[in-house]
Length: 175
Image (cartoon, rainbow, N blue to C red; front, side, top):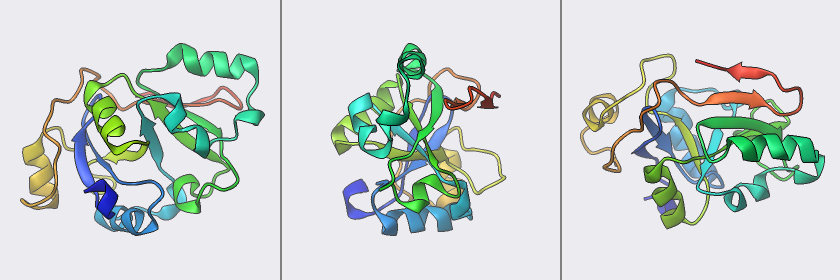
């Protein structure tokens, strides 16, 4: 499904997420339409390891101290805003010069990213500003009974990942 420019739902650390190939403009357009979301917001990328996100970031703009902070928290439920590689498409960064990335410890995400062979977009499974889906049944109710859902369990986190801007150290999302 992901290789064919489709959007899927899958279990994350705290809820069901929607994801697609971050390099497919066609897939991202579908995702934006499904969520009724502005392209200006950008997206989070989730990966099973750092190698899967390296191409999206400008690693040369990170200090050793910043890298140590990132790797101290990964894998885990921490999303970092990192300097974007200049070649990263606008639909991933939105109006920002950073890209939001997370290396997950959640087994369902790890298996999915490894099977896909790269990072994928991760955003809550819902229409923008609506409650996120916590079960596959809720995903079907929100997006239709034929929506592709990866079976699995959500993790034990009670809230979405924390978002930390590595440049200034500010906590952007903490609930």
